[in-house]
Amino acid sequence: MRYYFVDQDRKDIVVDLNKVETHAGITQFTFQDQTFLARRLAGKLFGSWDGKKWFKMTQLSAGETVVSNTMTYKMYRGFKPSGLFTGGAGALVTQMPGKVVKLMVKVGDKVAKGETILILEARKMETEIKAGASGVLKSLLVQPGQALEQGVLMAEIETSAP
Amino acid sequence: MLGKRVLITNRGEIAIRIAKALNELGLVSVGLWTDNEPEAAHLEYCQEWVHLPGSTNRDTYLNVPKIMEIIKVHKIDAVHPGYGFLSENGEFAKTLKAAGVIFIGPNPEAIAAMGDKAISKQWAKKAGVPVVPGSVGEVPTAEEALKLCQSIGYPVLLKAVAGGGGKGMRPCYSDADVKTNFEAVQREALSSFGNAGLLVEKYVKDPHHIEVQILADKKGNVYHLFERECSIQRRHQKIIEEAPSPFIGADTKLRTEICETAVKLAKAVGYDSAGTVEFIMGDDRKFYFLEMNTRIQVEHPITEEITGIDLLANMVKSAFNQPLDFKSQDDIKLHGHAIECRICAEDPVTMLPAPGKIAGFETTFPQGIRFDHCLYPKFTITPDFDPMVGKLVARGFDRAVAVRKVRAALDGLLLDGLKTNIPLLKVILDEESFKAGQYTTHYIAGVKPQEKVAIAEEARSLLVRVASVEMGQV
Figure (cartoon, rainbow over the protein chains, first blue to last red):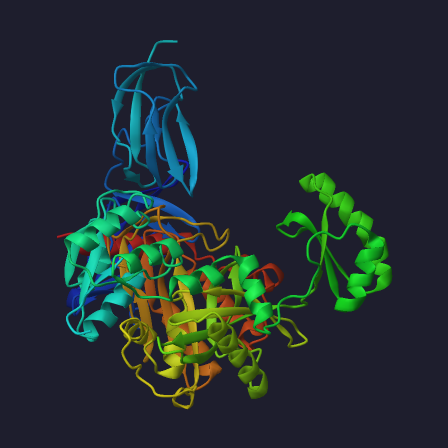
């Protein structure tokens, strides 16, 4: 199974996972030269590097944001959703968690590169989210007051031919 | 008091803590939920849930007219404001009083007396409580500054009236220092702030933030529950607190002196609830009044742990004019040592808020851990609220045991999905000067624990994450 970890700059790390179910409910996972074991016990999830020392793990789901060291990644299983981060200059994606304060344009409006599309509040500061390209606003997927995570598509611009 | 209806005008971990006290006392806990937090975790502990429409703080927890309307409609007898929001708003306390509703906090006059820093300092001076000695207003010339510095005694701080953030201030250790620095600081003040006005203040070297917990009833009895030390701070906010203060240590005379000074001030302003008197203490062990917080504080659990007294329950009892759980100051004894680590949704290195969604949450704690929190898997920490989401508290036979327990508890606290300060807290608890109890408010700036945050091997770290997801697949 292939996993994608996508960071703030939409760069991704690919983890090609080898999974083998072994005896006694233990599952063995291999990635590069690392082997990891996991099993369930009393409804909780446990992991081990050597099969001797076990530690509790959190139960995660694909599509969630995870933290490794000081990096935050959006984690995807099997595929990278399109439109979320493969979009070009016309796709507006949140770079950090924030809250929509105000929408400045509506769907169907002509927008010029650098024009403010909406205002986002993040870390107690208001940030103007500007169009990365000129064109027509194709979709506006957020509403004022909505709290957004990092990596969420907020709006899409149908870019006009250069 | 039984069966009275109490509205909690707060959210998060403190709303849970208040609801626990209300339920235990046989009162009806009424919790609020807002449009941006419909699944508010604190409702789990509240007996009744009321919708407070709106999604900004100004529209909800700070909106007095809306709250007054809810009080009327839901026949509320008393309000507990928690900390932050309306907790130190004297006007709100007055409005409640006029409406015949009990405010679980001090009387409006006491809030007014302690609410403004300048006014509270005047009250302190009147009550004979030491404040940081200094000039009253600007000092125009070097000659006058010199005279004043000599009367205050060195070291002295020359600082810009408009200063802040460490700029435009310089410590002086002698007459010669004052002479050479006066004009230099004036110039710096003029160029940085456009105002050359200077103040002279006693320089408190190697300061400690030490605060005394006060609990008072409505009959004029004021008690203290010993002190807390909160010198580990970042961005002028506390991250680790402990009780009693390791700096005061075994100096019982000093402990009694600072605690009794706090009681003296509380009595002078007619204080009649739970509150905290904050002091700054230098390496010469002299202390000065900073301010009084007229509310329950974030770090109250460590005081509860070392005294065995439930501060929230007694604060409620005091408001309803009921006898407190103890009879005299002598009933309040200090047992062992307690430490609190504030768990914050923030980057452990930059120490800036990093809101997000909790993807996974598990705990495996050592014996005797208290975790006051509002966390659950899939809980979203929005940028609207303080990044502090939980308080990990350990009490031990002595300081070493408390440090050991809280350190082990940090290893057993798993939070994924957002950045937290847990890695930073681990570095501090492992660091020698912290372990020795030798630190001041300059700790973060001096020791720079954020530079030692452990880096895990990326491949291993990611492998654990994908294994977790795979184990959840059917």
